[in-house]
Amino acid sequence: MRFTTVIIKKTALLLAAVVIAAAGCHAATPTATQLLAQTVEQIKKSPSLQATFRASTPDGSAQGSILLSGNRFKLDTDEFTTWFDGRTQWAYSRRTGEVNISEPTFEELAQINPFAVIGSLKEGYNARRVNAPKGSDRLELTPKRKGGDYAKVTLTLNAATHFPSAIEIVTTDGTKINIAVTSVKAGKMPDASAFRFNKSLYPRAEIVDLR
Image (tube, rainbow, N blue to C red):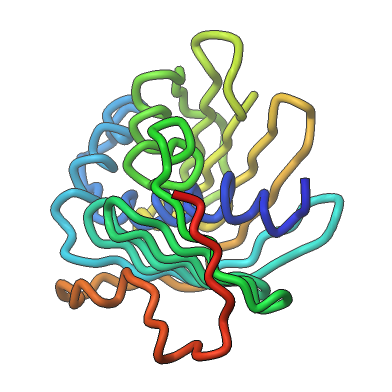
């Protein structure tokens, strides 16, 4: 699988969802399980969330940004821009000039939708606190059952701000993905058009409708 596809479909939104949702979790020393529950609540309450990140695997590296609002998102990386309005997804490749349009299934959204990912971590993973550097908290998540994409997810959070500063993902095939968060910001409710492909901005794009 191409590195950029892994980032888009399995990593970037996992990063952004966990990173941003973790902000504002102010319980006085919450357990790992409580913290995960709070992330779900926090992301539901936020009108919009914006994050930038850097990610790397043995195959290469990528950087990008993501805007989240409810179950909608816009993701930008070096090679792709992806929009999802809650039903339809548009994935634009800068290299080919193509826009693939699809209506993802639940299984597909479990890899790219922040709510599906967070839900799977909360329900399908065991969470525990592990040793962390001074000024940080660290959570380790392992699957309750065999199967799925992730063998282990380790979240390192800034203890003062509750923003994750690093995420390490180990996939079931042993691949390690390391992510560094460079900025996180909460904002107002975006216009719905922010999560839809605008043909007028990409007049030469070739539309490939996969629905």
